[in-house]
Length: 151
Ligand code: FES
Ligand code: FES
Image (cartoon, rainbow, N blue to C red; front, side, top):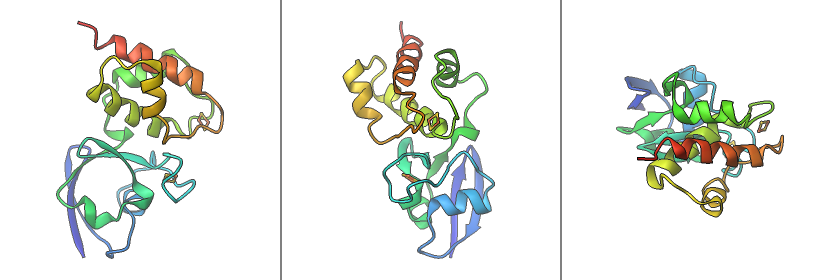
């Protein structure tokens, strides 16, 4: 079936079966490699993309459900994105495998709650796992990025 959506600001039209995951479409047809398959069951957040502004585990999202949606991946962020800068400044990664998913989840968090408390940040990030254990630096990055929202 034909599926049309907006990916990082450009219109895309792909062919996929009704049971193909959005993750497969992004990686195999759209050359989007910041979404990574790790658990494959919606637990780790490594495959996160923003779909209409909401972080989604694309490994368990069927591609047809993205029809007509606005899909954003890490490739679609500006070079000077403040959350990306905060992650770099706080050294909020080691291998970086989990980082795109965390960054997109933090962007959504700060859209919803520009000044999150530490417990609020932890709750928002509960669906993203970092096997390098960079959690404290990631939380520090959230605080740095939230300062960008100060009046
Ligand atoms: S690979 Fe999708 S949540 Fe883990
Ligand atoms: S930085 Fe390696 S998995 Fe998070």
